[in-house]
Image (cartoon, one colour):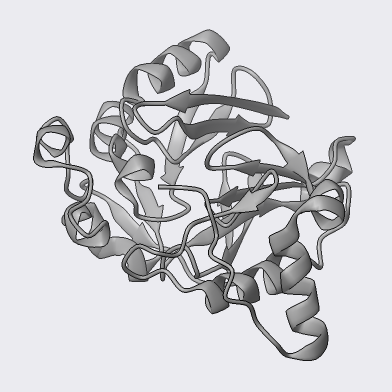
Length: 241
């Protein structure tokens, strides 16, 4: 399996291109701010044929290049319906916090072919089976994408966690649509059942594993405690846009 990723734009958002191998079809995950050139370079370097863009959530740092990337590659994009409005109104989703000058540099709006994700769905794209899990908390429409079948080809399962789970931290919940209790529930429901060997590729920062986060991430520990005794936490998550 080929997974090529790079941090893009002002927020250093990780954009990933995933394919069974070089020279084959690929899926593009979260082409954010100024990601279009990196996508084109990665496609050319590995001789890839994009077939879809899939989005972990609707924040502008993850979707800013969706329109140009989908247009250049002639592919559809997928997003959860609860975050679809952010494609055309990103400032509303961020409480108008990122500034008019920066916003003037971004292409907003929906691509010509925008499709909606559903919790528990399986997407058959680029010869791979993508498991979709709705994981609200950072946004109402946050999702993760899992490739459990990666373990069948000699590498650990992979979870593209978006801004749900980071190495050592989790996504912030203080923007419109964020909710700490929902995020903790999503961590417990989506992440805790996964095998420790699962590689976590998040929206920001370095890769990690579920085992590493289970042992060291205080928020995943809080999620485990909440599931065990039915209580939550008021501790604010720290990272993400």
